[in-house]
Amino acid sequence: MTQDSNKELIRMLLDRVHPRPIVRTIILVAYEVNYDKISDGITFMHELAFRGFHMKNPFGVGHDLLYALGKQSPFLPMKFRTNFQARSWADQWLYDGLYDYGHLGWAPTFWYGVRLGGWVAWRSHRRKGHPSTELARAVTCAWRKISMETGE
Image (cartoon, rainbow, N blue to C red; front, side, top):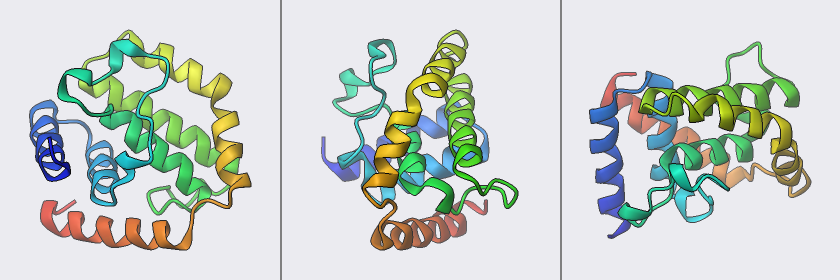
């Protein structure tokens, strides 16, 4: 599959699943900025893999993007401005996305996992100076484009 067809597949999947708007928007933005090329999707949970589609789990891609953006994420509510709050919000976003997708049992299990061990990835992004100016700019532009398309 080509990257463009993955974007179309993602849109079709989201149209079918009907996740809450913020879940949909962040996944669309992640694929618009090609973050799926950098992300590992969902780690350690083969039950949530999208191997049959030859792609990474879109909820994992969105969550990885949120970790890379950190507290500079344009999606964060204004009151969430510390690293702890931003990471908590990103983890709750993953829970909500997995729950919306129908992973009712895996959503809390995976949420506990990222709450317990996600600090390693979060700190790794901060040590590497993420987000880069280019990523932050690309995300903002993609978000505007998608918001205009979807009206969200």
